Image (cartoon, rainbow, N blue to C red; front, side, top):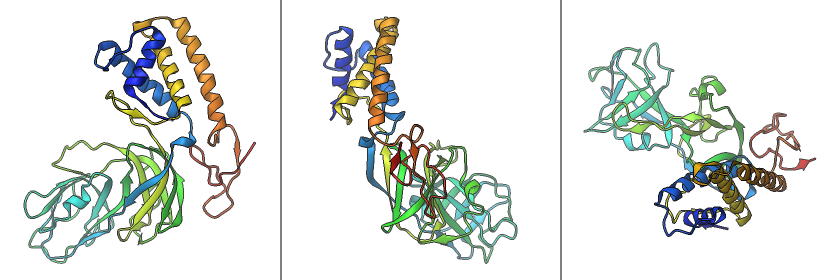
Length: 340
């Protein structure tokens, strides 16, 4: 049920007619590592394998942060920088696994507008945040009174090993899951998504490319990831548990282990061998085509035997209030019963 990268490389080498190696540092082995990575992605990420289902996904939400002291909110019209004097919530907001937004709730024109916080730092006694855009509202200084601000966090970035979310629970209660296109934003899914908060979410949106709020000065690289968006916005810190389909990380070191059934590892090796015959290191295009055709056919047979394939079989659509009469495409159906 597992194989190291070195074992996979040597299996490919033997298929091509080369001797085994003790490391993956020589030029040919380095090329084979790339070919194995491509074969791994093709074999594992183009199908829904039951052995990749995990149920250990956990995240803790961030409660709203409010600032109501006089002189605490400092922001200048035309500047993207906001300073929260004497605040020390920087570590919570910039943990790197969520996207936070801030609103100056007492501003006459933009009190209900929540601006994305791109990055933040705590150089001395205050939190300093870089906003997504220049502040369009009224300038607030240390001398200003009656100025309040709120930071809300409803968008979370899932780990890179999460390929697809299957279910979400909060306090042991199922939460409706909606899958959205990666090009969408949170405010496109729900009008005024930050107007309401709750200790229990009604819907969890999965998808999009969420950019996390990061630590550091402006210009810090923000790496997008698969988003998990909760609505209404969490009004307190609570634990969200989710099941998901696992994305196997690329293997790079000789001792890195690929945890898949042996029969799937065989297909990954065969695909890598086909690519090796297609490449210059073992050039044989005819043999490459034969190996790839037979391996792909074998993979398709195995894929039919495990997991739901909504593109090839009709799924029973749920009739509950969360089902909405829609088939769940690209993930497990809401009702797992399958009818041919």
